[in-house]
Amino acid sequence: MITHAIIAAAGLGTRLRPYTANKPKGLVEVAGSPLLPRLARQLEQAGIEDMTTVIGYRGEMLAAALSGERWRMSMTLVSSMDFETSNNISSIAAAPVPDGPVLIADCDVLLSRFPSEWLQKDGADLTIPTRPLQDGEAGTVVRALPGARWNMTVLRRSQDARVDDRKSISLYLLKSPALVAEFFSAVRIAFASGQTSLYYEDVLSEIVAQDRYKVNVVNIEDLEIDAFEIDTVQDLQAAEMTLSARAWSVHPKHSAIRS
Image 1: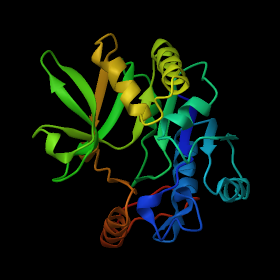
Image 2: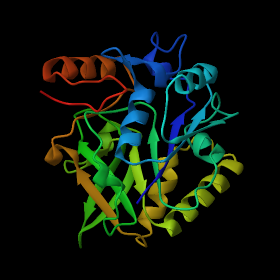
Image 3: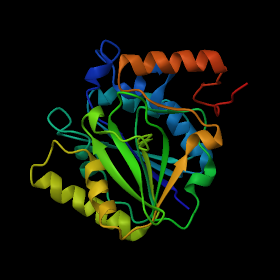
Image 4: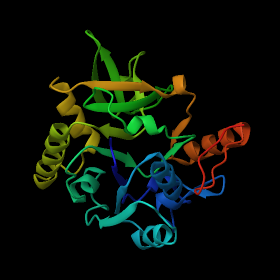
């Protein structure tokens, strides 16, 4: 079972301005609830025992917000010194290397619920929750290959998308100690060599492409789970509309419940 999580929360959140002009993305509120504390509470309730958060921009505000809550799980804060000049690879490079399976997520992930089963063994080395890719969307996607296999790629342009692509929700469950060790080693090598324009998903994609690890892709709509990655003002507005329409309970101290 995965009991450790690493959350990347160091970025500037420039696409979310003006909401991030004076606060980090992880404290942007959706329906009155800040993103990161809400995600952290869901992870704790699902069974995470130790959460490492990599902070950078307005990191003192995130530290204060997290320390102001009472947690059963252990909370560790790590600072990224390169958040202003690099992509999210710097957050993973700054985090301590886990000694076992780990959940990795961005701080802007908003879920209607987080199933505790995702933390359990499922016969895969890597489990990726996904949703349908929307028109005009880019980002990390997975693609079906012959033989019940999957490929993973980071789309820089929406024009490169394929009809059957599925969008990652920016949350990855690394369940194989071998994969964890290889991934963190590759991230550190890439970062140390100056490849700061990479996303950590680029590194994970290269490892997946070698077809040495079993990948399990989860369709969240089959589980009646809604997910948003709050990267832009448009994402924030869409999430607010969905929460209003479906009457989610989004207080960080409680699990999300749809009426």
